[in-house]
Amino acid sequence: MRKLIVTALLAATLVPVAASAQSNEDLRHDRRDIRREQRDLNAAYRSGDPRAIHEERRELHDARRDFREDVRDRDRAWGRDDWRGWRDRNPNWYGRGRWEAPFRYTAFRPGLRIAAPYYGPRYIIVDPWRYHLRRPAYGQQWIRHYDDVILVDTRRGYVVDVIHGFYR
Image: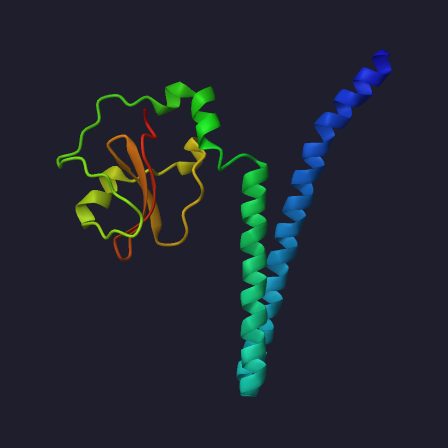
C-alpha cells in the first residue's frame, strides 16, 4: 500500500513538470517557425513575386498567432491569469497602504482615452507578474488608479482593460 501511495505522489508531481516542458518545447518550436517564415518572406521580397509575398505574409501571421496562443495557454496553465486566487492566498502583497493621487478618482472603462498624467511613471506597476496580472503587450502598461488597476495603451492613451477593486 505504501508503494502505491508513493508512486501516486511521484506521478502527481511529475505530470505538471512534463506539461510545462511540453509547453516550453511548443514555444521553442513556434519561435523557430516564426524565424523560418520571416526568412521565407524576405526571400519572397527579393524575388518580387506579389503572390509569394502575400502567401508568406499570411504564413508569418499564422506562425505569430500560434506563438501567442501557446504563450496564453502556458500562462493559463501556470495560473498567471488567476490574480484573484493569488490575492486571496497572499493578502499582504495587495496591502493598500496610504495611496492617493493628486487627482480625483474616476471609474474608467475600456475604450476611453485618458490624459497622460493618469499613466505617468509614478503610477506604472513595474512588476505585474508579482500580482499575477497578464503580461501587457508592446506599448501597454498596467497602471494603479486608487484601488483599481488599468491596462493602458501608452502610445495613444486608450484604456484596454480595467480591474476594479484590485487592491481591496
